[in-house]
Picture 1 (cartoon, rainbow, N blue to C red):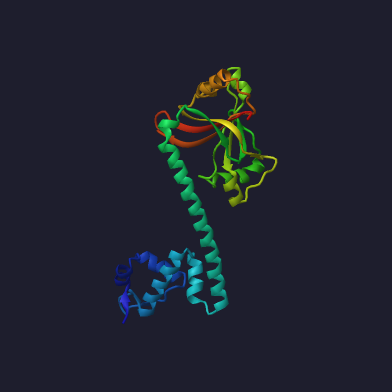
Picture 2: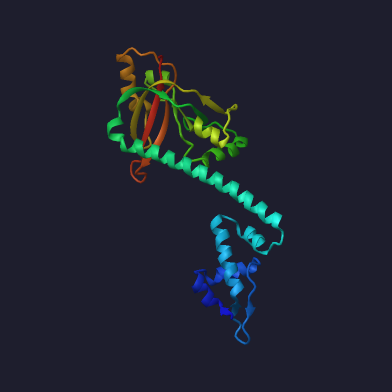
Amino acid sequence: MEYRIGVVSKLLGISAEGLRLYEREGILNSRREEGGGYRLYGHLDITALMRARSYHNYGFSLKETEYLINSDNMEGVLGCYQKRLEDLEREIAVKQRMLEYMKEVNGLSERLEGDLWCIRREKRPDMYRFEFMDGDCLIIEPEEYGEFQKWVNLAPFAFPAQRNEWEAVLSGKDHSISALGIFEKDAEFFGIEENERIVRYPSCDCLYTVVKIAGEEVQATEYLKHLKKYVEENRIQVAGDPIARTFLSMNKRENYTRYRQIWLPVEG
């Protein structure tokens, strides 16, 4: 028994164009109905489509699916399976890591009301930073764009990680260096290593705060003034520049509100 393309399309939930694509790729072999020109598919075509759907859901490409369905080489089929198993394990590991990362960001967002503008001592996590702008000036060379794009594609694990010169803040000036950052535990997973451009920042004792900023003309002297006041009143010895992690951005159409964690290194 053979069935027209419309019947098979409705039966399996695959569009007529999808069936034609499978046919062009060699997964199906239809024949034309005498006189009418309709494509006809038999029982084996239907089961092949079910198998193709399985391969699609495994994550195999159309080209790989065609090979798996038509190959008579068991070694080749097993090789495809093994590679896909490895890829799936990697994808699952990334998804699991992303789940934990999102839980952490969600927790930060839930605690905003209590953490905003408050200051406490906390160790900054080990992280790597890829600085790319000094103020409004791009500081990476064209030959570094490829590596920078790799970092961009690591989002959300790679995040905006601005550094502000503390000496500039003390003198009432804003000298900000923009960067992408990634925590060391994630850097190790993705194979990020230190080089001339990528700098590792080891964990250290810090004053920690969360700030809220909005709009384009934002001055570090404003959103860090509570930190500056705390340092001066408590006679704390600062040991480095504050580094930020922007973890939430909202309301881009109006004032573009951002929330940042700030770590200011201090003497223990």
